[in-house]
Length: 170
Image (cartoon, rainbow, N blue to C red):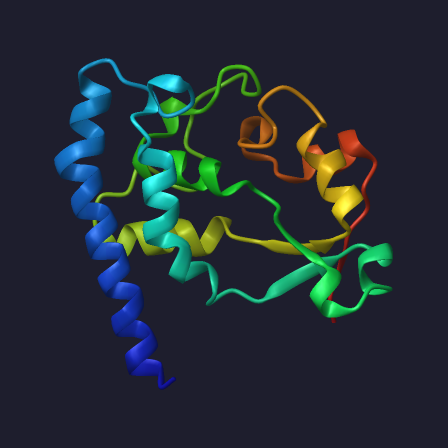
């Protein structure tokens, strides 16, 4: 795919997501809804689906030793900062899950003020790591809400809690 086509696809995804955020998600939050609880209105899942195409633009940058011993098809791609936490940063950092955050300040300049800013936050926070299925399960059980969040924006905290060590790929 040419760079201009990829850029157009990214821009379209960001524009559509930002429009949903402005017209539905932020009004939902202003009316008392939340992004981190059952009162989310399904918006985190919908935004994840809308922004999922952007995920493909990011290469896996880390891996555990055990994952590298597996065939590529058997490796699990894990988001160091969970996708939901990235969405929270884009929409409203004050919506960070209080079960795993001691503060609600932005971790990457959120909330997004434009589709371009949305892309900037997304690109800044998205890091992917190859892990084994067992390691992925450990990461998701490392602490309350850590399957969906990163303590105070530190995605590597889950890895430390689960005793999963990842290394940068050369």
